[in-house]
Length: 295
Image 1: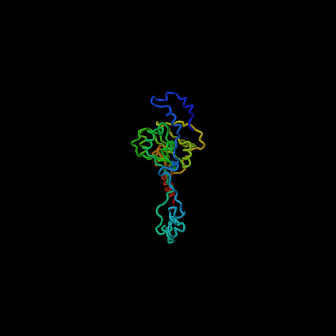
Image 2: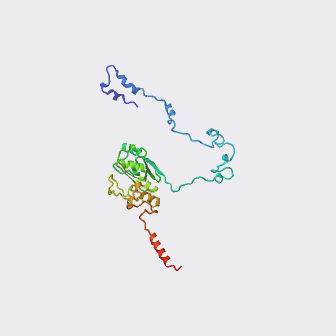
Image 3: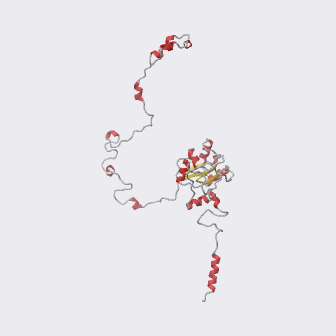
């Protein structure tokens, strides 16, 4: 609705230019604008934003024909066919056998390259003055969903120029050497699939557990980590393979402090020179028994 002409007439005279007449000010209000309503019929999504759903079994007009894409007659047109079904004859698995196996001990590790970590540090998405854990990597979108853990790899290690303190599930030997050459440190520790989700949600401490003694500075000193009220504690390794991996100093495992000097990480094989030798005692006993024989 145009404003009253009385208010327009009270407008300051400075709005009028020397060659402009007064009635020109009233033209926008005397003639209201008209816009065609046909623009509502031209509104549509962007190209590729909407895909029409395929409606099967709706006749020839659906675009899938009279038979809904199944063709004429046959078992596949009438119903479902089990996987590997070859018409009732001897299955291929029986004739040719099943090759390969499913490794139940395999783990699904998310790969993480050093070049990506350095790029995130350069962009300010990771703080190099604090330990970098799975929680920081996930919150900064450096990694996606994690199942069994994250493994640090050495791709792009020549780009690493920042000393970092990384606490991660596993790391390759080349990645450990590259991080330590830049003045940082790598510590591998155990995470269960359930604890990884709790660490990401902030319900579990990402570094320390009951058996861990992880230094969080570049000098390798043990620092009192501030205890936060986490509802669930971080679990430690319980399986033999996991314990042996994180006891190995070559892997920079968080349980390597448990090893004595010269002791190996294995729980099954004894380190040469540390076992008790009883062979000589057995020989002496056998010799004394031979002397007491009559024949």
